[in-house]
Length: 501
Image (cartoon, rainbow, N blue to C red):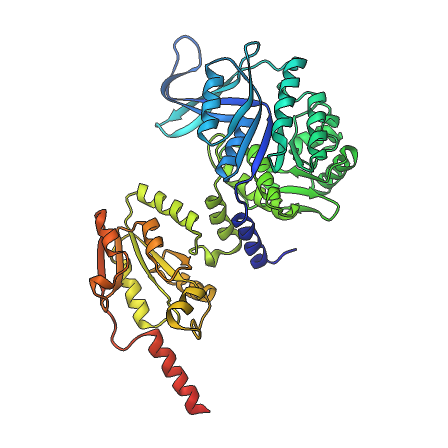
């Protein structure tokens, strides 16, 4: 089992290398409709709550949810499926287009409606959400042969341009036995991995030859004819599916227990952190999407399942099918594996955090420096920063930029050690490493409300002064502690070393 630090670094490295892969998503595209209303009384006509509608929300469902999850993770979804020639189909295609998905492969038909799931959500005291009823509009009979042939043509046309394939089967008649098998065979011939989220029940022979299958506990139990209560049960089910369907890997998701992974090289339970489960809708979709982008980036199966567990765990704490971003996953990884480094953020994660803070009217303070050998001057300087606003962000020069500024014998402490020391200070909220000798680009991205520099700088010497003032921000000059500096401290240490010799 990988050590915590090793896993922390491995997961972050994988997220950093995800890129923007093209992922083909085929299956049952659906529209989710959430009708929210205050449920304040019981109807005089029947013993049912009266829902006073306050808001209607539309989200991507089914295979469209997988596409939305892929887009949230930075991938480019290519959609193959079916929608009706109706308002719901037009809305769903526009929603996917707005997310950056390619929807040219979504066939429109007048013979069946867009699969739509409408949920009526009662609000207690305007905020506590409770699903009261779901109303489904669908036709689940197998699509006509000519429609299947058209989808297969679209599939063939796009297969060479994508890096990986996802089949999301909700048993709504799109992924017929024949079409499923044809898609898998074509993908294998094109050397593309095929990941399948299978339908509950039914004949899993249609998935034979796929790369990976992701049934949940109930689906795997039904397919294998055995009850799954323990990790050993999950292991038997996973190996049965691998052998029976000629899979490279099987991932049996086990809700609060995590997921069981079985491959030629690994057979183990991958646990998850206990969660407050708010809504399981869409959890399987985000697991499939995360596995796809991870494997498209050449991740190994174990790392991909760890990331999928993390994404699924974040998703179930949200209401309805909701996307999970890389920044959210980075924060969760820091909490799980590297809590002491939680303050150190990638630029993407930092900017998302700051946006969240600004929405809550918190002011952002920014400063930067090498912070090589921490001393009293640094402590008082950062406490001054804390007094200027709500959130203190420190731009920390990387080792390379320190060498460019101060010479080849600096820094004394590497960037990870310097970041770790700063992380231990209550006056510092977040740290962002930057590689350029100039901090101006980082300042422009952070857009602080207050920029802080030491009092030894004149206005002309403060990088970013004009930019910050251009949008109404201010610059604060911090008083310096006399005779306290990293350079001075290092020189005194070297002088003592010389005397000792």
